[in-house]
Every structure is written in C-alpha cells, then in structure tokens.
Amino acid sequence: KRPIIIDTDPGIDDAVAIAIALFDETLDVRLLTTVSGNVSVDKVTDNLLRLLKFWGKSVRVAKGAQKPLIQIREDASSVHGSSGMDGYEFPAVTYENLIEEHAVVALRNELLESKEKITLVPIGPLTNIALLLSTYPEVKEKIEEIILMGGSAGRGNYGVLSEFNIGFDPEAAKIVFESGLKITMAGLDVGLKALVYHEDSLEIKAQNKTGEMIYALFQKYRGGSLKTGLKMYDSTAIAYLLNKDLFETVYTHVSIETEGTYTKGATLVDLKGYLKKEPNVTVCLDIKQEEFSVWLKEALAKCI
Ligand code: BDR
Ligand code: CA
Image (cartoon, rainbow, N blue to C red; front, side, top):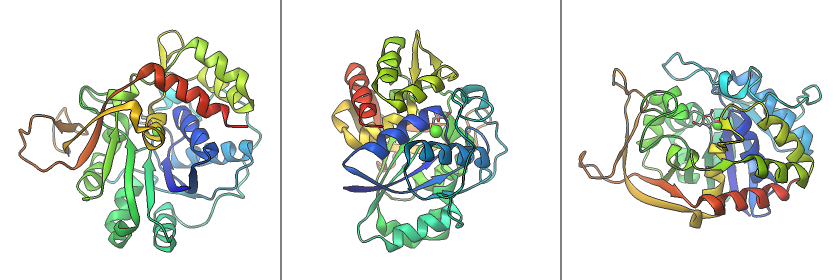
C-alpha cells in the first residue's frame, strides 16, 4: 500500500476526495491534517472528525494552522456553507480521532518515524506544509512527492489570476514550490473540468450510504450547479495519485506571485520559458472528462 498524508480543509469537494482515498485498497492514509481555508481550522477539523466517525475510520487527525503565514484572507463559506460542509445532518462531533500535537509536529513525527517515504497530498492552502518545510527541513528526505490541488495555468477562482488554495496563502505556496521537492499541481485547468452532473449525482446517491451523504452535500455546494456540473477540484489530486493516465501534463517552471497589486497568488506556469528557470513542477493541463467521471463513481462505490 502506498503511504500518504492528506492536508485538508473540508470543504465539500475535500470530503469527496477523502472518501475516495480512505476506501481505496492501494492507499494507506497515515495521518490527516487540517488547515484554515474554506472556513476556520476549528470548523474544518470538526467536519473531518464527523466524516471519519460516519465512516467508522480511526485515522488520526492533527489540527494545523489557524491563519495564512502573512495575508488576511477571505474564506470560502459562500461556496461550502457557513459550517464549511453544509447539507447533511451529522451527529454531534466527537474528538477520539483528534491528537494533541499540532499538525506541523504530527507531520514531522509521522515522516521521520516512517520506514518508507510518504506522499503528501495537500488539498487546502499550503500553510502547514510551508511551516513543516521551514521548521523541520530534515523531513524532506522522507517525502516521496507532493501532489497538490491548487493553482492555475490560466485564470483564477479567487482573484483574476489566483486559485483559492494558492491565493489564500501565497507566501506558503512560494515556500513549497521552491522547496526542490517533486511536485505535481492539479489546478483549475483540470478542476474546472472534473464535473459531476445531475445524473451522476443520482448514481452516486444510489451506490451506498456515503453516496447519500455526498448527494446531500452537493445540494448546498456552490462549486457550480448540478445542471452545468459541480467541480470536484480536490478529487483531481487523488485521481492523479491513482490514475495518471487521466491527465495530460507538462513538466515546467512555476513561480508563485507574492507581490503583484492584482496578481498576488497567481501561479506563473511558464510554458514558453520566459523566466529562464529550471522546471520544478509537473502541471496537469488537461483531463479526460468522461473517464474521470466514470473513475469517480467507481471510486465512490468502494465506500460504505
Ligand atoms: C479549492 O478551493 C476550495 O474551495 C476547494 O476545496 C478546493 O480545494 C478549489 O479552488
Ligand atoms: Ca480543499
């Protein structure tokens, strides 16, 4: 089994991605860490704990950064609802899966104590990962690669040119993208095409209890509409991890804009070599849409 750690801010599309990862027979989710993003870190942590209880999974959860490194940012409660995961009535949250360590310390310990290298899958802002790499650079040797949801080779969904996870904490993204680690970016170029339509949602609902829960969340998810397609951004990172053939990629240089008056948080995917810098990121530029949709439904069918 491939060991991974997911850093997340659930988030309705996060919930779908986590479901797939937890029930995939080839993945070993060693730890889940939470970060402020879609809503506050307290709320996203509660959401994650509710999900784990729903699935009866005992994966440990460590709560992470409360704020971006420098920016004061707006959250995405307009997209995911004020709880961050509106739409389904979960039982009251309980805390047996929550460990005491801060996410950054838990990440360090898990990595350093692991025999194998671990793949990191961040599907929220990169604050925790940046703090980890700055505070405990010795962990780099134990990171197999980073497969993240974030960024865009084109336009943004947070600012004109910035995607939410990068725009929320550009300084953190800069630290991660300049780390020298192997990085794959599944950004808006594929996220905007990773769609669930009304018919798909009914199929997902009919599959199992998880499908029913996700269907309920979809009714409140403002990441598109079921008519024109709901965007499964975070599942694209898991899809890349499990099925690279779904993607068209390019290995190129990506810089993070942290200064621009209007462009802060942009990911400059330098397809033509203007910046004269070495490639540092595998960028997902396109996705086979129909195949992704089939894959998503099959992956969710493995849940309870
Ligand atoms: C990203 O922003 C969040 O709202 C989603 O969960 C996803 O991680 C998409 O831009
Ligand atoms: Ca997310």
